[in-house]
Length: 170
Image (cartoon, rainbow, N blue to C red):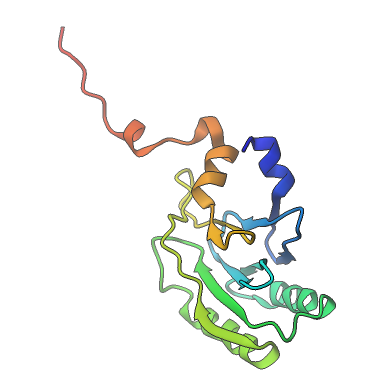
């Protein structure tokens, strides 16, 4: 897939917002989470995903938008799987309290499947100290590294390139 093809299939969610995948745009994600939380809801049967980028101190604007999308699209009976991502990959437990509040809202307002979406994918952007993620609803898989490789093309540094080079002494 080229960068142009990816951009045609990608929905990028900004801070305090939420969005949903479509058949034409099955890849959805967010970037630069840093002091924020990323929320992913996924319906495996419908091959559909929703993403919200919520501030940890005040997740309400993003949650409001997320619930509005759910109700406008008549998805309130959908049993979503979920994943909530911390913004800083070095401080995983920092947002525990906010995560629990979000889960509580999910249980109150939508049929919420307690099953978490498994994630073994590397989510951090090597150029930032913040998590970001991209999810392909058509396959049900994280495509973060593939998307970053295309979006960052020349600026991505692989582990091999990052190792110190040994020079021959002359």
